[in-house]
Image (cartoon, rainbow, N blue to C red; front, side, top):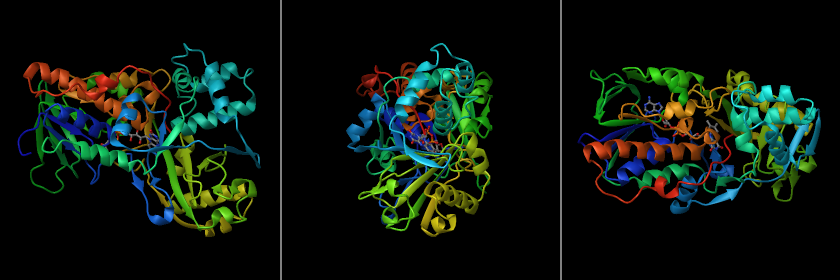
Length: 464
Ligand SMILES: Cc1cc2nc3c(=O)[nH]c(=O)nc-3n(C[C@H](O)[C@H](O)[C@H](O)COP(=O)(O)OP(=O)(O)OC[C@H]3O[C@@H](n4cnc5c(N)ncnc54)[C@H](O)[C@@H]3O)c2cc1C
C-alpha cells in the first residue's frame, strides 16, 4: 500500500493488531508501525522440543478473559486448557498444600468495603487487621503484590475487591502458546488493507484536528521517515508514555497527569529447564513429584528471593520463577548469573537440597528483562489507589484525531491483561470509525463490528 493510509496504528501488540483488524474489516486503510522486528509486544513465546511445552517470556495465562477475547479465540480455533491444579505453600521452612488458596483470596477481597476508592490494599489491611488472621494477611499481600506487580501500599483496594471478591473465572493457557494469538491476528489482517512496517521506532506524533504526522527514528538515514494519516491509534506501553519516549506536538497536557498517576509495575519471570528426569529425581521432595510429573500447579514461597513458582506443563522438566511488584526491584538490578543463583538458592531451601546440586540440574534457562526493554520499560499497569480513573482518562480520544489503546487503557479489572488489551483495541477502532466515518465517509460499508456484537457482559480477573 503505497498510498497515504487513513489511520496509523502505533504498536503491533494485541491491542494494535485487534484495532487494525476491525478498521481494515470496515474498509479503512491502515498502516501499523511497530518498533521491534516482530509483532506481539509483551506476548513473547519460545519453544524447542526439549522444553516439552510452549514457553512464555511475557503473558502466559488467560485470567478469566472477556466475551470479546473468548469470541476471538473460538473463531480463530485456538484451544485453551485449564491452568488449575494443586496450590502449595512454603513458609518458615515448611511445605504444605493450600487447597483453600483461592477461597481465602476471595474471602479477604470480599471484606474490602465496596466504596473503598482512594484506599490502598495496605490501608485496608491496617484498618481490618484484627478481623483477618495474620497468616491470611501475609498470604494475600504476597499474592496481590506478585500478581498485580504493585506495592500493596499503592494498589487500589476497590479494584482488588471488584477483581477477586466474586466467583473466580478459571485460569487457562493457550494449548499451543500465546504466540498463536498474535499469529491468528496477523493472518486475519485483510490483504491489501493493512501495511505492517517493522523496525520503525516512532519518536514523535505531530497532530492537529483531522491530520497527524508520525516520525520514525532515522537510524542513520539523512531524512527521518515520516508517515501521515487522518488519525492515529497509540498503543505503546504505559512505561513509554510515562518516560515521554513518544513526543506529542502539541503536548497532551490534559492526559499527562493521568499517565503519571497510573500504576505501572515490574515483573521478573524466567523459565528453567532441568535434566529430563527431574520429576523422578530424589532431589525434589516426594510430595512435589508423582507418576505424571510435578504434583503442583503453583508454589507460593512468601518472603523467599524468588517467591512464586509454577509448573507450566506438569510432565515437562520445567519450572517458571516469578517475582512481581516491589520484590522485583532488587532482582531487576541483578545480572543473569545472580538471578540464576537466587533461583537455585530458593529451590534449595524449598527442596531442602544443596543449591549447587540444584544448579547442576538446570540445563537451560531463558528470561527477558521487560524493564530494560526500551519498547516496554516495565511489565504492565495496575489500578493505583486514588487513580482508579486514570486508565479511562488515558483512553479518551483527542480532537477526533488521536486515539489510545493498550492494556493500560482497559477496564480497571482488565488492566495488565491480554484480553484487556484486545478489548481496548476494539474500543479504539470503534472510536475511530465513529469519528472518521461520519465526518469523511471513509468507511466503505462492512458488517457491524465484533465489539458491538459482543458487548454486554461484564469483566473478569486480571493479570500475573
Ligand atoms: C512478564 C509478563 C507476564 C505477563 N503475564 C500475563 C498473563 O499471564 N496474562 C495476561 O493476560 N497478561 C499478562 N501480561 C500482560 C500482557 O502481556 C499485556 O497486557 C499485553 O500483551 C499488552 O498488549 P498491548 O498491545 O497493550 O501492548 P504491547 O504488547 O506492549 O504492544 C505495544 C507494542 O508497541 C511497540 N512499541 C513500543 N514503542 C514503540 C514506538 N516508539 N514505536 C513503534 N512501536 C512501539 C512495542 O514494541 C509493542 O510491540 C504479562 C506481561 C508481562 C511483561
